[in-house]
Image 1 (cartoon, rainbow, N blue to C red):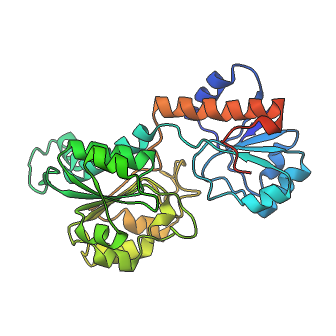
Image 2 (cartoon, rainbow, N blue to C red):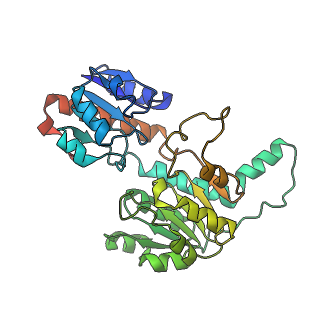
Image 3 (cartoon, rainbow, N blue to C red):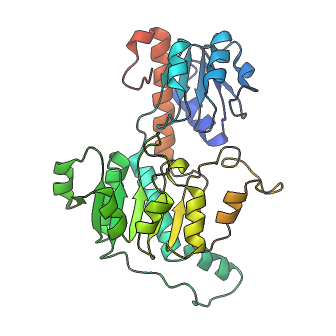
Length: 331
């Protein structure tokens, strides 16, 4: 089967080639999928897409006209896909429901540690032969209250790591796992209580109509002035303008972000020569108490291997018979 792989990068090309083992003809395209680039999929029975590819009704309709039958997402999130339009056009959509909860959870902890203990700042100083310690004071994680919003596999792993630091952990989930909470000595509560009580708040929920801007100006106003906000989920969970307002007014302690709601066209790109043409992101980058990475929480050897294997397995299964597709199918 011919597969057009949009928004491909060196790191996932290697993993996909290894998982493919020559079964399919993979056409790697560095270009993101959009209506303007959809025709690059001509001749392909399947396309493979990433988190910032555009899969709206217009694009999906064009893909059908080109003869595409399968959209294989190499991601867990699917908020960028119009599933109703996909179904209308007879396109099957698959995803990678899980790849490595440890990769994302550990990155969230890494962001927190870097932010708290000023690791990047200290590293840059030492490189300049500045060995002073002024301005590098952090805080003990031990004894702090950590609020975990979403206790799927990633949220659970993050909570367990924070328990290992000796933190008190509060959790919110629409479907609480009481046995897991009991086994790991964490406590479920309502979202308002979590916001008010936590020294650290970490987001591990999908993005949908109900969760968009769950971190709003109102939510931020409930939090402690020293709170550290972590987001390794989806950028749209946080209202960026409300976050900037809170940072400017020193109403929160800081933020650790691996995602940004308008990251398409910025993250995964080298803009070192052209600069960032996004005033909101540019403003966030000016705050000394904001740590940002470019959507790299998933980026471990283990996660890439699992993503590639699940994606290629879905494509192979589809080729054998669409009815055989497992639970990875969205529509």
